Image (cartoon, rainbow, N blue to C red; front, side):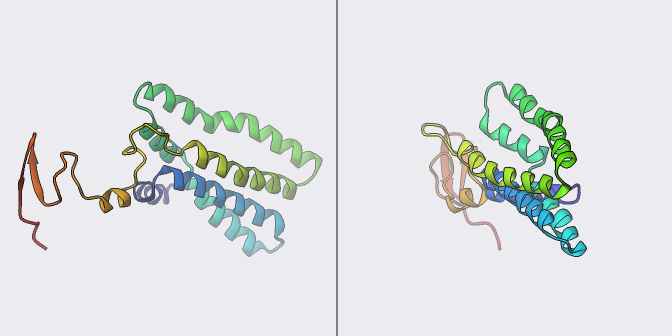
Length: 175
């Protein structure tokens, strides 16, 4: 997760938090489902460390914090506190439930339940992070989308130097 955190951060800049968080949940879910269904130790390792590990690095605190920072203009500190408390608060609730399933059934059922829950939460998260009508969309726009719309905030086309309210044409940067 530590190795992939900068990669996940870059992917958030390119694709946006909505895509990354929902995609990360799907990867976690698929990894858990694969772990639950395999008896092959190599496939188990790939599913657990590969798919689920990648998913966990994508839905980590840095991506959640980016989502909150882009969604909230007021009371951002409170929103960040609530969002990041979910990592420990979630463990407080989920780990005892997993322990009960482990004790009553088996580890496979625990991974199956986690996989189903993660995949079921992905569409809910996708919908919750959808841009709302009437709100500025700049905070949710990805880098690729903003690069496709090269107009500046002052309305000037690309390769235009802007200072304050006045804009003047400038030559393109050297190649």
